[in-house]
Image 1: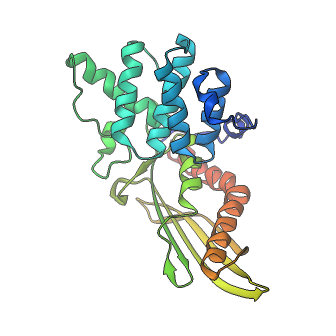
Image 2: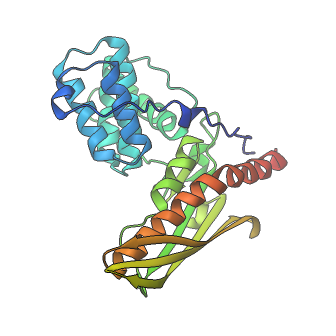
Length: 283
């Protein structure tokens, strides 16, 4: 049975909202640099966060405690970027530094990876065998049940249409992924093993042009489905999210970004509460 996972705003509140340091500040690996890296992670600036953390670690001046804070954040950032090989390598470096490292309960994707690598490194002196991360399409749900707590498995299906064409880079998926990962959900690349199927459909429509500024509006629908039963657990809609820019396409993208922000602000907490209620009923 899937455990009830409590929604908390504390993860978001933990972000330090200080001014970002200039690039040269990365040469001083201190708590400020780690806080900046976590802010990059929270706002989806994964490449910047990775560069900052790798620079701090490579500099060699981090204390042991700071390294134990930096490595998990580095792995989380690699996982959020879907850079599985780099996440595995960073986790190995952490375990070489602290062989008996015990990960926190959350994020559970990181916890899973640590446990799997610890098992592998006990059997082999050097190179670890391939590790199946939770968001692999071929992942076996039975593997997740070995970790306490087990993973709730989620598949996200997002389609965004702007000016009649599907958007190449999603404006909605990153925020949705972060919200789920922070609450310990594992993301799948194929739906067949999913516990929950999240479907998002967003489309833009043209507004007006005035003095060289184009406007557009986005409408969005999100549905959460209990995948084994097909029962819809939650539905949310966002209408008339407005965007403006100097051309029609960019105005539509701005409207999608506005819709994603409204979805995150007004509906994510309620969405997670409905999923957690469904989990509690399965216990």
